[in-house]
Length: 468
Image (cartoon, rainbow, N blue to C red; front, side):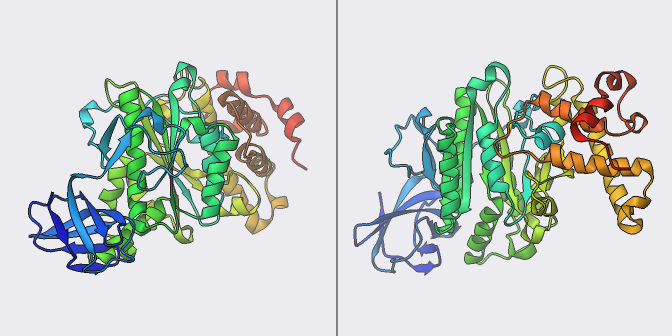
């Protein structure tokens, strides 16, 4: 192998080499310092015989004279075997749990292989998270990509831990269910919270964890989701497992991409993000799915924080174009102590209709969900009117809607961080809450279904009656 002595230029996390023959884009590179330290990088730009290299560990301590660079002849690869289960890695795929290196069956390019659209299987059947607002109203389907839109300081980390702890499949598939968890730009206390929560709850043996800390190089942050998804694809499509990939925080990833793009001198787009942000996010999100001939699946739940709670910010905006729905967290609910603070009306799962119902969840799931959405939308109208004329001036029906809204938020939306509700329990609770309303107001449900589930006496017994 050729070894290049010295560097032509150093700029932030990037170094440049001139007169480099036959270099390939994204080829791995090793840089050996005079001190004996070895760092790694990859080629991110080629201009004639000039190669720009992204150094994973940063360029602190490098100079134009003290470095010897070797091209390794292959892209960045993730070592793979079933031993990854229960292990913790850093953002670039190196073990950090003190258990040593994994025994590698093979290595795979972290950029993955594109899925043939013809071989994709339409996602069906659901993943039970034990969280009523998700299971009942925005059901997560196997092979789906369903992001969570949160805000700074909200309880999305707590929700991520609860999903990892409680998520499971129904039937015999439960034995083949594993989780890949990737944290990007996490503070040390948050990373410790994730690690401790998984170990204490006994789920670590079926979790593969990638931790990129806030003080780690931004380059590693860009690699983290790709390493995680490479492991997920290996477990799903080579070992037939159903894999749930939880990634937080995608906004930290995008900000690292913006910083890296700026260091390369690229022309910025909206809010300084690179013009290729959409295609870059798509290269991550589109790695979810089910392939014909493979029993496994990859399901993604990316979590992102919206700067200033702005859902039109480029990161949530572009994510919404690519993914199949979203779960939106509401700051007002969060501040009133409701957990999880899911904002029901803007949340949806576009694949929900094909993964629920008889044979999957329960035959009445769709009716219950539709009526809860319609009734809670009416609650917002009643609250808007009450803010103008006062709640005591509302009609009797609107006052019942106001009471239903309070009970719905207190008992359906709000649940404990360790409360794991079965899908039947969630649907029964939904019907009981709807029974607080007059029967004639439940116009999204047929008479036969209402005869089975409309129980006003039990509803009053459990939740009380609205004050006259």
